[in-house]
Image (cartoon, rainbow, N blue to C red; front, side, top):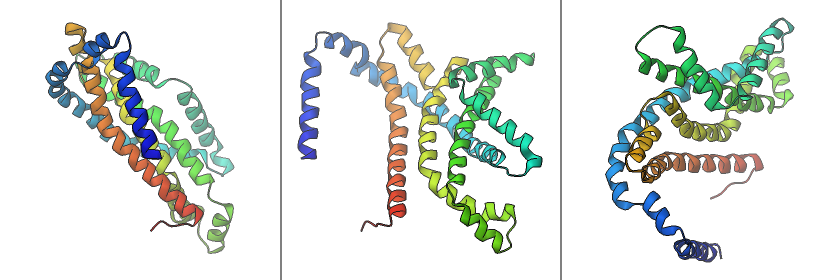
Length: 258
């Protein structure tokens, strides 16, 4: 039944869309096969630039996010200022759009240093803006995982003589990280797409290259080529996330699939 309904839906879309009045113009402007073949090789290099930014931002985001979650979860009254600062950081950073943070940091911070090397500075501070914003979101994911561990786990560890740090490192954190892997993967999928926002600072990555190619003849097919490249990365990441969610669900419900 699922296969039949899917085939019927796809057939209806394939038949109905070309019958719309503006399809010919849309096809020429967005789905020109000749233009696609022309620009697609030119998009590979700039897209690899996006991938590189993602690869060095993702580990930093995980590390900074985990540290912030630790700061928000401190229980000692003497460390309350640390908890307060971490809370304010998360609230402020998450309350401002990512694009605005990239603009403010990418253009504002390099202006403090009088240098001609603007291109390299913009790349660095654009990456800093991504790390800063996504670490706030990731910290909440880590914090939710840590707080999901039942208090009896901590009590049992303390009864065995473990310190607070040992309890967190050996008991709480391994369980918490295992639970939050799927939502963390969702954040990484979003990061992989939001890397293109750095293009507003000027670097010629995939989105900016598509804009340059489009400006030559006002054909928007290069944007489709850029979208295909991003899908080649985001779809496998999404499928991995679904697999991890299904595995976590099986483990939590005590069922197994042979």
